[in-house]
Length: 423
Image (cartoon, rainbow, N blue to C red; front, side, top):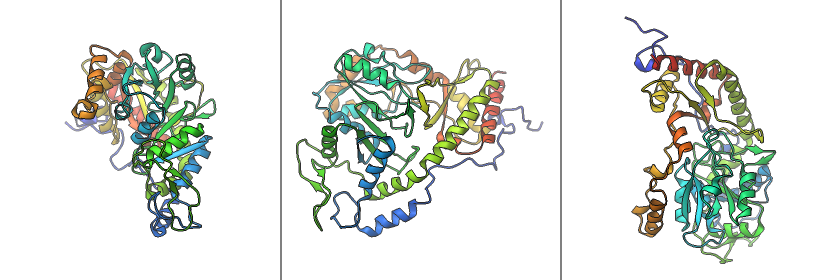
C-alpha cells in the first residue's frame, strides 16, 4: 500500500512540506559584515588591548555606542559571552558570598551557573505557565533574595516593572536576563534597560549573533565603571592614550578577569545591527500571521503576551499542546512536527533543579554553594515550569524569517500531527 498525505511522515507518510522547499538558515551575515571584518583584520587591532592608532576606533567601542544608542541606555560594556555578562553583572553589585539570587526554574543553565560563579546562591522560583516568565510573586517564593533575575523567555517578556517595584520594597535589585530578547520593548522601553542592569547574549543562535559575544547595559555610571574593570583585568577604557598606548587604564578598584570581546566579533555585531530591524520585522510579521491561523487548530495555543509588550523579539516560538494525544509526549509531538516540516521542533529545557547541565558539585570552589542549592530544592515542585516542559514545543527564530506560506505549513502540520497521533 502506498504512502498517503493523511499518514504521518514519521510513520512513512507524505510530509506536509516537500523536501525540496528549504527553510531559512541561521546565522545570516548582513551585507556590511565582510567589509567590516576585512577592516578589522587589516587594522592589526584585534583586541581591546591593541596599541592605539589615531583615526581608527576600536570596533568594540563602536558596537558599545551603537547598542547603547539602539536601546536608549547610558552604557554598554561588551563581553565575550552572555554568561560572562551575567557573572560580572552579579559581581558589580557588591554582594556577599552566598547571597541569594531568585532565578526562574525554566531557563538556560547559565542563568543559575553564572550566579554560582559569582559566589551567589541561585534559588529557583516558579514561572507563570501562560507566559514562561517570572512574575511579581517571585519574591514571595524567594523572600531572602538580594537579586531577582527575570528571564525573557522564548518570545515573551517578563513584567520587569512589577518585579522592580516588588524588589525595591524588600531591598532587592533586578538584573534582567535579556539574552534572547534583543529589541523587545515593554511600553516602549527596551528589554534589558528596565532593571538596574541588563544582560545580552550574542551567541550564534541569537537574533543578533556574532558566534560568541555578550553585553551588559546600565544607566548607572558607577556600575558601568565597575563592569568595565570586571571584564578587563581591573582596567577601564580611556579614549586617547597617545600613539602606541593601550586604551585601558589600570584603575584597579575591583578584581577583574579577561572577559573582553575581540575585535572580529565586535565587527560582526556592528554589521549585523544594520540588518537587525528588517529581520525583526519579518519575524514579527510571520509570527502575527501564525497566531491568526492557530485558531484553526484545537488544542494548540501560544504563550500569553502582555499588552504592555509593545514590540516582540522572537528567539524561539513556543506553542503549548494541551491536551496531548493519549500516550504521547511533547517530545513525540515535536519529532512528528519535524518530520512533517523538515525543520527542527523540540521541547524546552527541563526545569533547573533536575537539569543535568547544572553540576556545581563537581567544582571544589562551588561545592559549598552546591550543597546549599541541593538542600534548598529538595522535594520542591515547580508546577508552572514542569507544565511548559511537558506541553510546549518550540522552533528557532530562523523558521520565521521566511514567508506567510511557511506559517500555513506550520499550522497544517500541527493539525495533521494532532489527528495522526490521536488515532
